[in-house]
Amino acid sequence: MYCLQWLIPVLLLPKPVNPALLYNHVMFVVLYLAGFFIERKPCTICSIVFLIAMGLICYSGYETCPFWNTCSQDSHSDSPCPGEELF
Image 1 (cartoon, helix red, strand yellow):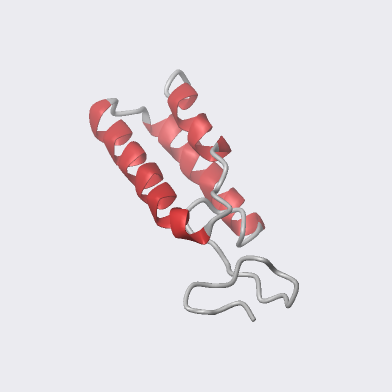
Image 2: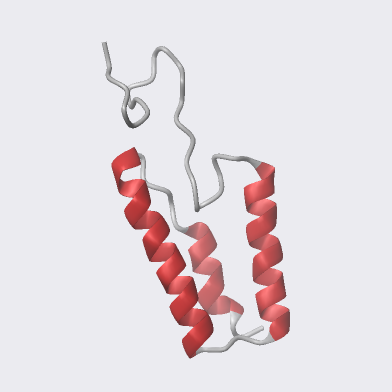
């Protein structure tokens, strides 16, 4: 379980509020995880625990997953979806 001390902070990274920065956030997380799995070669149990935790986070709510973001379609939202304009 020593491997998890390098994986758990990835789950705690806050997602950016600005939708323009979401791509950079996703690329950072993906590259960090790829580099971690290539360099450190975590044990099978740690990898399974991490993947289950990531799956539960993504399953619990679409907006909580660190790999994608939803655009709020509310009329009082300050940040429109990409491609939309504020009137």
